[in-house]
Length: 365
Image 1 (cartoon, rainbow, N blue to C red):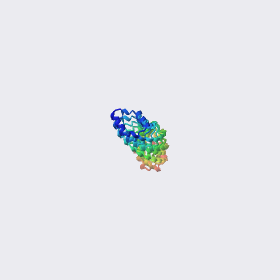
Image 2 (spheres, rainbow, N blue to C red; image 1 turned 90 degrees about the vertical axis):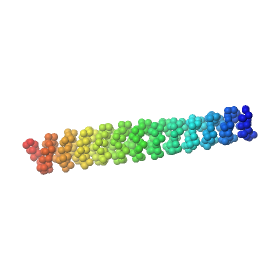
Image 3 (cartoon, rainbow, N blue to C red; image 1 turned 135 degrees about the vertical axis):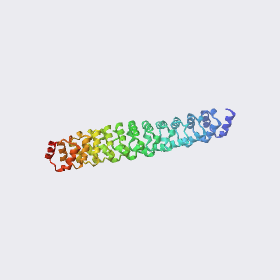
């Protein structure tokens, strides 16, 4: 021992140092400790440190600990820390942890966290987590969260998630959601979804919805859909709807369709309707079309009606036509009747014209 080290021993009150403490000093390799480190050990209360704590300090690399880090260890309650917890601090890179991060670890109940959870915190980049995010992790029951779920949270951009969104994830039963569903939620813009929309997704059984269906919901503007419209989609069998049919619903203005009109479309066999026919229904003012008129259109074989014939029907006042008149038009070969003849029928009061007169008109050309 050099003169400097002997002087240090004298400064730390050698007279009060017992045989045990001297043995501890020898175990911690006093020959390598400089004046600064000795002073730090004195500030942290070396007189109350037992052999176990001294051994922990040497395992965590006390030679590289500065005054700031040593004081942080004291603030986080070194006396109650076991060997396992001290080694955990080393695994999470205690050399880079500042006072703020250590204080956050204490607030999130470090004593109950196992080695696995501490390593998970390292994986999700604890150096960037602020107090708000750590508090959110605690509210979502981080103690029961496994590595897989934490990894999923990282993929869904946890840094930009607010407290409200984190609570929504808990409401939708995140424990059962797999990586695929999380990815789907991200693609449909979960960051802008409110509590109401998340709840709607749960009602329509999001666990069975595949990537294709979620993409369809995005195409028809799910952000503006209310609870009523979402329930309508479920009633019309959205699970069996292909991309083409969903796109058709968007073209016909599904935002304005009420429950009655949606059920009418289902009754008329919307699954077999092509884009052309849906466009025709829109041209003839589907908003004012009742169940009776839609049923009539189906009976007169709407699949054979072209755009020209549909426009003729609307010009002649199809809204006031009964089943009898529509049937007469079919018998007289409406496919060959031009606008002039239809206009003549209207002028001569078609409501009083019998089947006989219509046949006579056809015979006379």
